[in-house]
Every structure is written in C-alpha cells, then in structure tokens.
Image (cartoon, rainbow, N blue to C red; front, side):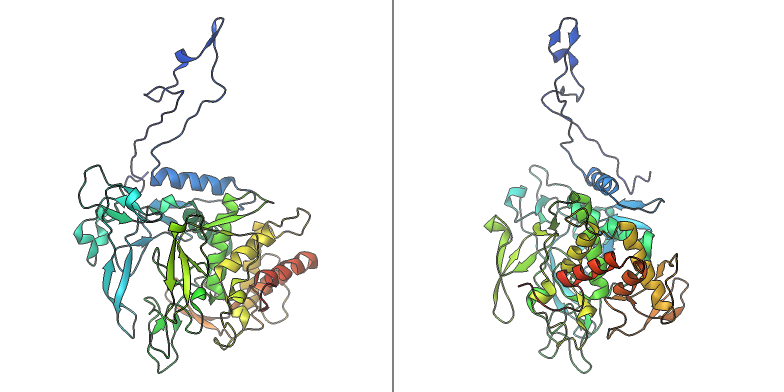
Length: 483
C-alpha cells in the first residue's frame, strides 16, 4: 500500500455498550446463573469518517449491488487526486480504465476574465467565506482549514498541502467555507466507478468534448454566439448558444460548468455521463422499487427542489427570467421519465441544424438506462448490465462493418468512438481518432440503436421495449414532451 495514495489513519469507536477504549465490556452484561448475557445488539460505528473509509464504503456498495457485472481484474483507486481544472487549484474526481481518482475539497472559483478566442482564463476570483464552524457555511459547504497562499498560483498543485481537506481546528485562524472532500459524495464516487467499470467492459469511448464551437466569423460570448466561454473548446462556449438556461450549466458554481445533469450535450457525452449516473443509482437503490438519484451540483428550475428554503437561491437569466437554483445535494427521481431535453424546448433540431437524436441530457439517459436495466415489473424484458456492455460493443463493431453485415457473435471492444442515438440518421460526421500509438485514424460514429438491434436481433421483444423506453425518456429522435 502506497502511503501517499492511502494515508495512514487513526479512528475510534464508541457506543453505549462499548468501553471508552472501544473494547466490548462483557463484565457490564447482566448475568443469568453463571453466564453473561450479551445485549441483543452490539452497536459498532465509526464516528470519524475519513475520505478513505467513505471511499471504501462506496466501493463495497458497488460490489454488492445486484447484477454489477464487473469484469474480473484489479481496479486501482487513489485519493486526493484527479482531473486538474483550469484554475489549477481545484481537482475533480475522474474514472478511467486504469484509475479511479477521488478528488479533494473545492474552493469556489469563478473565471472573471477570459481570452475571447481561446477561452483561456486570464483572471480568477476565489470565494472564501470566513468561518470557525461549518454551521456558518452555506448549504453543504464545510468550514475547512485554509490552503497555503501558494496553492492559488500556477503549478502549486504539486504541493500535497494544496490537497488538504481537514476541518478547521478550534481556534484556528484563516478558516473558510469550502465544498467538502469529494469522498463525502457517495454518488460522485460511484459515478466515477461506473466510468471505470464501463471502460473495462466495453472499451474506450473518448467522447469528452462538451464545449460548442461558435459559427465562423463570430466571437464567443457576444450576441452572435452567446454564453460562457468554454475553457476546453477553443473559440467556443460551454452550452449550445441556441438553448435556454434550463438546458445549460451557467448556474453551476460547485463544479466545472462544462456539463451538468440538465445540460443539452451531444448524444455521446450525454450517454457517457448518463450511464455513470445510472451506475451510481443502481448501487444505492434496491431493484424493483423507486429510485432516487442525489445530484452533487446545483439544479436550475422554476421551483425549489429542496424542503429547506435556505438551499434554494434566486437566479436571474441574462434575459431577465427569474429561476431557482437548488444547492447540492438535489434529489431527483431516476425512475420517472421527465424528458428534460424535450420538455425544456431546448431547440435541439431548429437551433442545432441537426437531428434530435444527436443531442441529449444525462438526466434523460440516466432514467432510460435505469428503466431498461431495472424495470418496475419483474416480468418485463430486461437489458442486463452484461447486455449493456455488449450493446456498446456491438455499436462500435457495426460502425466499422460493411452495411448489411450480420452482427458478430462476439463483438469487439470499443476503441476511441463517438456516439449518437441512430448512426443511420445523424448529422454527425466521421471523426479523426488519436490513437495511443500517436497515429490518427478516421472513424465512423457509433449508434446506440444499431448496437441494440445487433444485440437483440433474435429477441425483438426486448429490443422493442428498449426502443419504446427511449421515446418515453426522451433520448431518441422523438421530441414530444410529456402530456
């Protein structure tokens, strides 16, 4: 065990029927003749949860969930690391084939000045509300020890002190409110584990482009291409310039704004993130019953999504529309269809100049995956987790096969693939894939429906049920909203 990856920890236990030294005090048990009678329940719990114990608990839940279908192998998990965000201070959790990284706490940050063409941030503003206890912090933020000043300069993340997520000690000066260590979010850890597990079972999709390039001759952030400048897509904006605020992430402060539960994205990223949300949900909900997904960044809607009014903040769109931003955690149903993409009239056809199936939200894909994998009625045809792996592998294999070729009995693993709903009806074009050996290769896009048809060529009942659910949840080309 590498002490740099899994810090040595000390913890203690204490309950009403344990001694102060955390040993079971059998002498305190009542007697019956010559025998000591133990209590009906010996309560043992850990009062000092840490990132390591939290992460271990989440992994245990993932492993013990029904039908996880994890490909045998060694899955590496590392704490206090992940994807370095553009501010060079905050780090997001990530999950890939080789490593599941669980990031530290976040300091709220906002880019206040960007290069108008590249999107690179020129100046950052960091929010550091002073505190002495977490009760003084808003929402789920905690009162944590201050980071060294050097952490807020470029390149400072090489210092382990910048990953500090320790609570503010009594009497400690300089403490301020930050979002807690990401191991506190059981859905975050399970989400990233879902990415890692899917990559091992289906292959590499490499479809993580969330920004949208502006039309030629226009400048990002202007009336001709409105929206927040993307820091990952040069000359582009975070959200499609034709969508409403409820279809974007401009309201998000708790994480990067490149994508969120309700944002309209290309179908591939929406599928990828929706699958990870689904995998987290199946790890924390019983098969067959209701399903609740607890989202870990803000959710924008016309009403508050929390029973605590203090968790909801007014948000006014650039056009003057008053909305409500619910602070995390925000609970949503992963069982009930919402057709968010369709309901919000996100202009996915007229504004995009494309096909509806080329765009989606991870919110809708979460519900779709959950519905086909865990139907409410036990006798309903079910797409098992193993079959989901094969659907994607078939989609990748069919994308490279001649038109009309029969499905392979054992489809290939995916290797650098973009996805849409229906590859036979799409405006997405072949793309240049950068391979691990440094070479480039032109690839066709894969279609989820082609993978579905190939996997269930001999089982039209399951195929048709999944297609119907795609319409029901708003991930297909059907753009009708719920009645």
